[in-house]
Length: 225
Image (tube, rainbow, N blue to C red; front, side):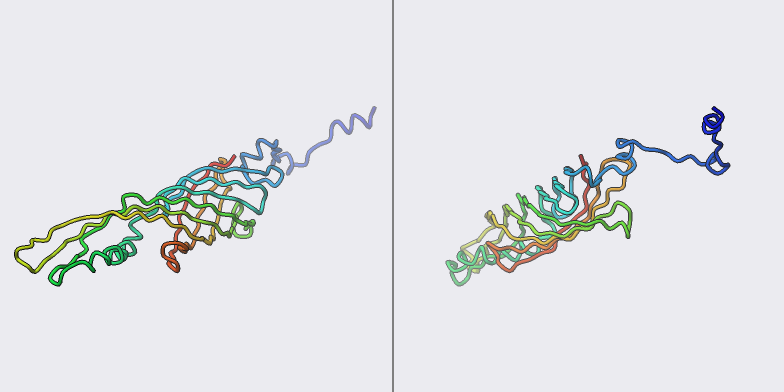
């Protein structure tokens, strides 16, 4: 009986009495470090991306190293102004062949009335806790489909005073696709089940303009569940 009494009245040291160690349940752990626990895969994430493109984004994490992402939205048309301007001469090349000697077609302006894209990406990722807790790096490859509708305004000039020429316009629809390569970083150590990411990718056109390439990218946020 005496030994039982002594065991029941074990005294805490002054240090252990002053500092208390918190014990978390699994649900509480998910609040302290909400996502990407190895025992809890698969995960899903849905959110938005700002940049080129401005898009809705979905990501599926079947395990800690592999992921699949889909982005759908609008390209940042302003970043392609020079490229779209350069396409004008190709579009009017046939028309110029039909002009008489004193006529010419001059570019005035253009506008992207539609500039949508859809892309699917396969990603390989790994933890980068040595840099910052909750940080992951990833690389990957994917495929991008683009649907662009351009309106061009032009001026038809003539040297003949009897022919006033005039201002006209035409539209062109470009549906193309190509491959993308991706490099990104994802951070998920928040008090809510969120992940923030930043990524850069390179797109190369394989249909309408083979050899054309451009860097794209942006930042975004996903709700992870």
